[in-house]
Image (cartoon, rainbow, N blue to C red):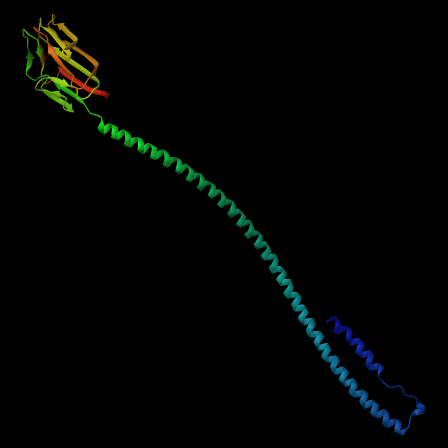
Length: 275
């Protein structure tokens, strides 16, 4: 557009330069005709020049309009670019924030997975230990009994010792105690606990009871009812038994014992641990 605007004055200068110069001395009739012809030629040339100038002016005006439109468009695009840059910066910041959050989440997931792995290892170890203990417990014998003497009341006195047959069976896990003989037979080698209670309430009666391990007496507990009151004896032992060893209670000679539905005279035992 600047080129066209600068070209217009140049064309005007050329038009004025091409105009003929005449004097009064050379004016003749033929000169008049020649002058008329030159004026026609000059007029046609000027018309063409002015037409071209008008065309150039129109082009310049059109280019000015286009240039203004282009400037506005460029300004709009620059403004849009500013907005896009702001949005792009915001998006990039958001992406960085999300990356940081994802990194934190990844760290947490990794830590959780590691913790889960440790817990799974511990759980597997615990389950294995439980299975081992269950297997041991399944193989370990279970032995426990509690029995009462009788519901009929008095037993004795007798002139000889009597193996007491505790006929009221409350518990007999493992069936190691025989109510028909009154004897407990150890099913396995191990440590066992035994306890007994004996009761009577008759005047001038001697209450005497013994605990035997095989044929060996472990204790002899007795008391005399000399005040016409209740008498009671009890004791307990932890004994090391071999498989097949026997434990039983004996009423000493000349003694009597009492039991009824109140279960005052009892005998109990159980396996502490096998060996």
